[in-house]
Amino acid sequence: MEKLTENSVWQELTAHYQKTKKLEIKELFENDSQRFNKFSIQHENLLVDFSKNRANEQTIALLLELAKSRNVHKAINDLFLGEKINLTEKRSVLHTALRNFSHEPISVNGKDVMPEVFKEREQVRRLSEKIRNQQWKGFTGKTINCLVNIGIGGSYLGPRMVTEALKDYENTTIQIEFIANIDGADLRQALKNTDPETTLFIVSSKSFNTPETLINASIIRNLLMTRFQDEKAIASHFIAITANPEKAMEFGIPYQNILKLWDWVGGRFSIWSSMGFVLAVQIGYARFEEFLEGANDMDEHFRNTPLNKNIPVILALLGIWYNNFFNAQTYALLPYSQHLRLLPAYFQQVDMESNGKSVSKSNEIIDYSTGPVIWGQQGTNGQHAFFQHLHQGTKMIPFDLIGFVNSMEEYEHHDEQHEFLFANLLAQSKAFVEGKNSTQLLDELLSKGFSTEEAKGLLLHKSLQGNHPHNVILFDQLNPRNLGMVMAMYEHKIFIQGIIWDINSFDQFGVELGKELADDLMPYLKNERENDNLDNSTKGLINFYRNQRFSIKANL
Image (cartoon, rainbow, N blue to C red; front, side, top):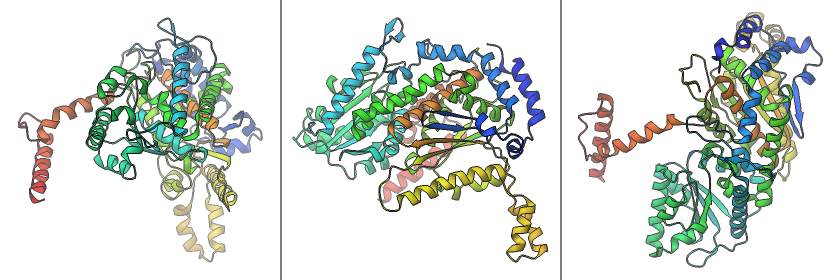
């Protein structure tokens, strides 16, 4: 593919940026009464308002031309057809197949994978209903009433986020806990309110080689063996979710308790697979399928909608506009929903692990910016934390405000609370565009009794410049279908950006070196090996560790 910075449309965009970088969003609205209609897209019960961006019609037209020049149409088709678009690992990327409901074949290496997908869904349904119907018994015959998901990365962030997001649809008494971190505090906290006799442990690891997951799972297996004194207990209290069933069986988990993954499913995209098992238990399998259907609906929109009305494409292009031309280094996701408070952390992994790359698919070092830092928090909490920086700071930080028209809560005053929440979303969106100028402020301060001199001294401090670009993304309500839809929307946004930047969004070699070095350093920490051959800093840190650790142990 042609180098991005040598692309003629890219060069046009560079020139266009110089002409338009001082565009005022407020003036764009003043000059076009139809701007909202032109710069918003409604799909089913989803509305994406991108009118509050520092972009005019020519900006959008050029960005769409850029997408065409980077063969985005072909890339989308290759994704859905199972082409090996993960070039470095020579794999297909087919998380979309996991939420596909058609019976048309989708092939990997000439084999239709859909029969296996449907078979695995049936296994998820069967096992989840067995637990929900209180038919799964522990080793001592007691009914299983607690699930503990042991996994990290995509095996934790996805299941944890979706079970939190859909808490209002929980219709079981099954308790769900998570263990991710190798820090023993995480394990102890999760097990604090559990009974081994009534707990089922789900070991979630695509490779079944993830050190944190296997260490935590082994500790729990040993605890169960101490409690029950019988290897047969493992079969009653463990399930595995993995693409490596042989390793799971070596651990002691019987074949019938193994839910399968495939190498064409990336860990950060695996929530649509058996990795969503805890969600199926929490909300029931029928609701779980609604979650998949929502994502599939966005897949169909993404695959079949013209680029100028294609929600993930538009969001991706606007992100590139700020990342590469305004030099914005971060992007914030701000859901006005307590249940979605983990969404920013979830997409922090999906986005940054996908597009945190510096080598092109043409095997060249990249000389332009790629994936931004993703962060965020739920509203209105964020308003009392970092919105000060968004309103008056010196950095360009584009963001998405995500909200829901209807609350699913049912208690006294919930309508009033939800209306106040939604009013805050709208108010912040308006404030980010309009700001507050010195004329308004001066009149306001004088009316509050400040002298003219005092008022003028406060003008700069209290002024809000506005003109902060953002999107507003609204749904009718937070439900399984809509959650699936918004998650797939962001997945496809990330994919499109990777295509335009000419990077492989589906490997993650950057996470491997630290794991290898941790294994190498363990003997030094245990004082089993001298650290003379280590670098000066690592040696000093290990000496501090040894001195503090062993001196504390000696005093216990």
